[in-house]
Amino acid sequence: MSAPTRETGSATTGRGARVEVRGVDQRFPAASGEVHALADVSLDIAPGELVSLIGPSGCGKSTLLRCVADLVQPTSGEVLVDGQSARAARLAHRYGIAFQAAGLLEWRTVRRNVELPLQLHGVGKAERRARAEHLLELVGLADVADARPSQLSGGMQQRVAIARSLAEDPPLLLMDEPFGALDEMTRERMQAELLSLRAASGTTVVFVTHSIPEAVFLSDRVVVMSPRPGRVVDVVPVTGEGGLERTGDVREAPAFFDRITAVREALRGGSDDTGGGRGGVEDR
Ligand code: ADP
Ligand code: MG
Image 1: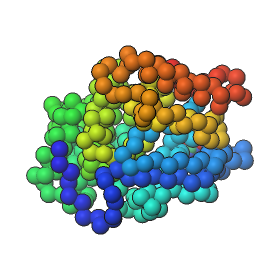
Image 2: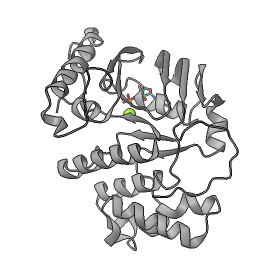
Image 3: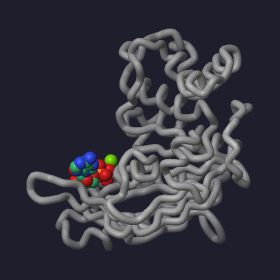
Image 4: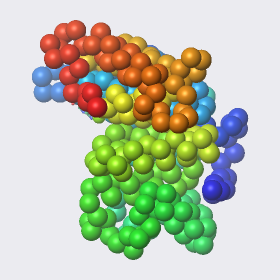
């Protein structure tokens, strides 16, 4: 698969972006005073790494992703993408986003939704169409390319949004529970697709999920967050020396279960005061 040519001149080594989150604190004004969403979050994500964020509902996972995407500005601290501010990275189209709400444009066909980012950045019609067709094939939606978003199921809409987020072969992919609405079979297929896509493109991925097995299946490292205000309570390595190898049936590998246990224990450790243990995190 060939990436559309990019005319941004930013110097980057390799395809994936480096992400540095430094002491990010996020507070939102609320009727009851304020909501303290994130407390002193720091993370270093290497180019090409796939890192998942996991933690109880409301612990600030989406907020953290939105900080990286420059959709909200941290109250204090900073986010750097390849050494640039998140704002500069956004303006240079350094990333693709697939968030929970699919956000598709109803007046455009599925195909033209996927083409949109390319069109906005001046990619020619033939190239954009070929790219959209390839991506729709990848997510199994080639046969509904001419439909409107509302004619598709929620899971299919989500897949269109994923295809769109990949349109520019971005150095940084930000995904917020992108597979949550999919049935189990499709979800597993999309997980495998994400891994092969990442292997082919070297893109960095920051992935939010509720599912411990999904986090372990996909990630190089799993970042475990505490209940609100979200802090990083643990970072569980998955791949690397002595870790999970992505060959054969990963879901049957002893290392897979071992890493699942490690993440689950980290979540318990960070949830002492919720009474409910894992609070909102799926165990399967
Ligand atoms: P998660 O994705 O982990 O479930 P969120 O990041 O969505 O958590 O939310 C963390 C907390 O911040 C929640 O209490 C949420 O209500 C609050 N929050 C998120 N965005 C805003 C906002 N724009 N204004 C006010 N409160 C917000
Ligand atoms: Mg969320």
